[in-house]
Length: 299
Image 1 (cartoon, rainbow, N blue to C red):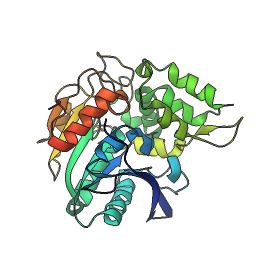
Image 2 (image 1 turned 60 degrees about the vertical axis):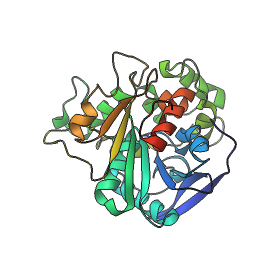
Image 3 (image 1 turned 90 degrees about the vertical axis):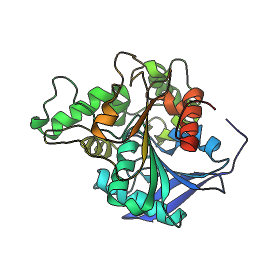
């Protein structure tokens, strides 16, 4: 994935405090990277060093996650978009490319809609187009039903937000049981090591439950939602295997991104699931290629 590049932790002033970011690379165009619903900037632990060879990759810890976990609510896509706007202004003199994985795609899309002058283009990685509600979940039932939808969609990695762990090995064991982490992805160790906060025997995931629950309400195609084009050029990279490595249950069926985001260019990244599209070597290479050329196919 390329030679070693410089990496540092940094922070950006935002409402209520400072947003933590990780920065790979020192030269080249700025690329702002946004992670998923319970994740952190180290979702880009493979992609950041690769793109850092010819970009300055600024990957955020969203409000309520990672090193930004103590920033106050409210949460939601509009709040995250304001934070991303602050990051762009801190690192760039003009519009930048935004890359978002999973919920990060929704944040990137909202940033483009609210702050189009700050965005040059979008790379949406298996996220950003409204999701269908899981079968049996009724949006009319209110926030509790939407929390159920998140739990159904994300599974045990959502449930972990209300759990404590006596040691790091127990925490890793939860992930080793996950079908999307078999075989173990190359980027998993750094990603998961950063995820824990607290002290033994009361370790917990850094993402705050209340942040994930609130943000999840903005991810679904609720009654009244209609397709809407993005104001900037965008590519959508689809993982054919879904949250649980199931080829019959992708997070996005073919064509859904284009249906809900008219004008987006959709590509499949072969043989990846929702996690390994960023944390696996093949997925990371495809994502990096899409940033550079607009196409994940190797050149």
